[in-house]
Amino acid sequence: NYVQPQNIIACTNCGMAPMPFNVAEKKIKSLVNGTKLFSKYIGH
Image (cartoon, rainbow, N blue to C red; front, side, top):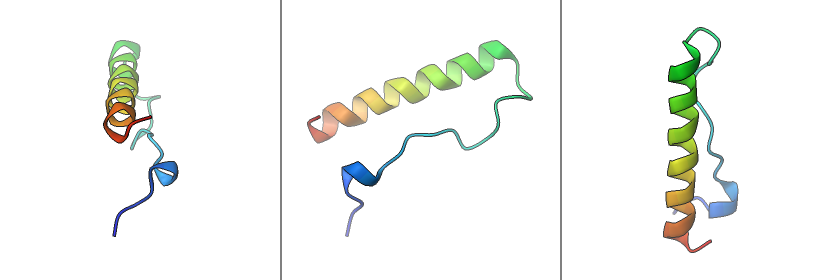
């Protein structure tokens, strides 16, 4: 049994407030890139 793609949500697992802006920015960019990669993998 697998989760349907429409039920997957990309999000951070921690707060961004306590970290430096450049670190938070890199985390968000990685999240976006991972989301794009997964979308391509599932054919969207």
